Every structure is written in C-alpha cells, then in structure tokens.
Length: 363
Image (cartoon, rainbow, N blue to C red):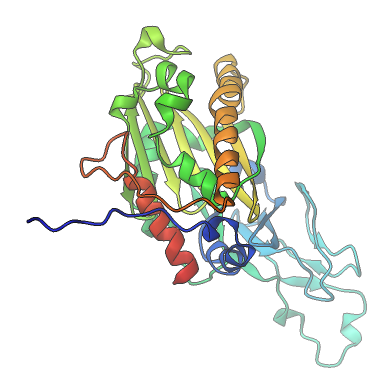
C-alpha cells in the first residue's frame, strides 16, 4: 500500500491574533527585512527629504550634495529631538531644539557654544545611518546594517520589472490610496498571494483584466512572482495597446517579502501595494499609481477607481471576515490545497508564505 501523506495545514490562529507574536515580528522580522521607504521623485534635488517609519522607528531620506541618497534615524545626537517632519527641502539639517546643525551627509557642522566644551570633537558626531537601496526608482530601507542586497533577496526581479516597465526611471506617483483593514497584516498578504478565490470573489478582475485559468504564482528567492495573460481585448475593462511593449498583453506581480508588491496590469500599468502593519488586528494598505513624469492619465485614473471599488473593496470584506474567524473557538487550521501542478486553484504560494511567516516567529 502507498504511504499516506499528510497535507500541509494552515498556521495556527495565534500567529494572526496574538499580540506577543506581533511584538516578535516587530522586533525581529520588520527590522531585518527590506521595507518600502518612498520614491526617488521625492528626492530629485540636493536637500530634498522625506520622513517615513518602519518597525516603530522614525526615519528620513535625503539627497546630499554629492547626489547620493541617504537615510538616517530621525533623531538629533544631542538630546534626541526629532530633526525633520513630513517632506521638504533644506540646505542644512538644523535641530529645532538647540540648533545643532548637521551637513546633508549627516556629519555635525556646528552647535551653540560647543567650542567651550573641553575635548568636544564634532567630527565624532554623526547621524545614525540606515541602509537604503534604490530599486527601479523605488527606495527601500533595512535596519539591519549587515543585510544582503535586494538583488540577493529578490533575484532577477529588477531585470524582469524593467522589461515590463522600461520607463520606470521617469515615473512619478499620481495617486496614493490608503486602505485600512481590520485584520492582521499576514491575513491580507495571504489573500493577495493566491488567486484560488478570484473567480468567486473578483468578477471584474477575473473577466475584465486577466484570464484566471492561466494564473500561476512561483517563488523567486524571497519574492512570489504572479503571472497570467490579459483577458480577451473585447472583454477588457479598459483599452490597451498590445504593440506598446512585448509584455503589454500580460499581467505580472512581484511580491517582495514581507510587505510590498510591484504589480503591472496589462498595458504595462505599474501600481504598487505597501502593507503597513499597525498591530495584531490592523493593517493599512497603500495603493500607489504612477505615470511618466506624473502626467494625468484618464485610463489610470479610471483604473484606480475601478480597482478600489471592486477588487480592493471585495478583499476588505474577505480579510476582515477571516480575522473574525481566526478568533472563533471553533476554528481548526485546515489543509492547504497544494496542487503539485500548481496553477490558479492551488495554494502552493500560501504554503511558501506561511513557511516564511513561521520561521520569522519561531526561528
């Protein structure tokens, strides 16, 4: 008799509901992975800066006089006042508390009466740097100074994305959509990372954007790569030009573990997902839409509205129902539908995702 195999079961509910698990993730995973910070268009010129947060830390990104883009913890090295807020432009970084002044490179330049302090050497004082990488025009930060580069984490993604969006260097965001969800961040990401539910729950996406029967997701380092074909042109919910690019008739997505995704709709329309975990029961999803030079586009504006009113709204109801279900005393983690042939009706991508989730918490 053939040996009976045991199907992989989904994670226990505590991974999604226990505040202690979220604290472990915040103190570990979120601090040693590449997280979205912003876009290069926000720091086009010397002295341009913007603030951002990750893993409970307040940070900022700035372009220095040599043209380099740097990131720092947003805290003065004197007595811990925050240095900057929001986004803007500056010639020098001046602390609002006691006017300690730093070069754009982070080095202390001056401070009132510091010359009177015996042994004070301003060359010893510099803002604490944070790892920052530019990736196809997007900026990602990592609080682990020894983290491997993004190209090691996400092999071939830069090349693949560039072939789908060769003009990414000219893109600017035209719209940010903030979507609060009453669920754990992992519930939302699992939902994004399979299309087993698409035909039943996303009619517009499944009949007017992609062909679900060709949908598949495969791991690529710490990336989950989604691929499928566009829907028949006479059924598309928006017009596309198949001659504009070799990939114009395709949909592709690159989910970068743990909380970001590049998504290219048919017609080479780049949009992004950025998950911001709030606590064990809440996450905010930021949807970004981009055009060349930030020019207005009726197609992208309408597509963003369609996306928000259909797929996004439908997913909110799904993930929030799951979060409520995870708190039910009657829930027992069921087996994942892992088809050896993969495809749209398989949860092999969720199996891989839950492996990373488990390792992040349990080691």
